[in-house]
View (cartoon, rainbow, N blue to C red):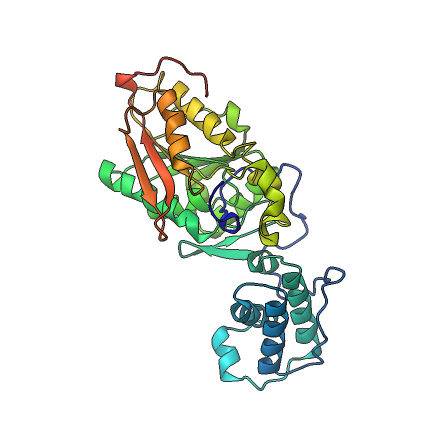
Length: 350
């Protein structure tokens, strides 16, 4: 992965050994004090006022090198007080209770240990919808919304916006990609697969919360054993960080994201080889075209296109659409299969 490692999104295979505590509520943990990690405690607040608590947290987070310290302090304080940001502004002099102070200090200690806000609060907004985030899944980040836009653009071009198409999400994680597309495509149905039972539990939870359970299924499959047959649109945000680079990632990623959701092998391209090899096999038996949309790390587009060309999936740059993110980086590619016009000779992955 050549993109900013701290922006690695969700929707990739999660570590099969990491599962959420079945007794833990997956919603934001704002009513129970969570013990701080050793060595991360900040100076006690002693029931300070709202404005004093926010200033204290901002200073502590800034000193720890946390980006957007004021915003993080505000969100943690609002969560500890079960209040909105507007509530904090309206009554800046209100004193925190002992329970609120304890909860806020616990939240702050976790953030000082570089645990992401979404994991502390247990939820993240993605494409305008809330998603539960557990230790078994990656945190769905804004960069992956580029994949959503690319997939919806394909659906508009193909006339699929109100058609009963079939979707397949490879490495579904929290379900953010599949469930967002189903919410935007009211007649579509889909299957999300992952190697992690904990990730699948999280995805099912999100499907239920969004009212989409009737239109999706989730299954525990190894990617190499998955079948692509029968699907119109296949999407994936696979692991794409070179294995040797993982330890150097931002602490929010290296310490808290499932490693198998990050590790793309020696050069970060292992999962692209597997997925594209499977797609090449699929087009030898499919009777209709299908689209594959993949998220990429920055700088990986040329290498992934080369893999696809060697497999006969695209020829001289044709049948591939590249989509850039808001920073102008190629964030995803879409490849259309053409079963009636096969040109690939060798199904071996490069």
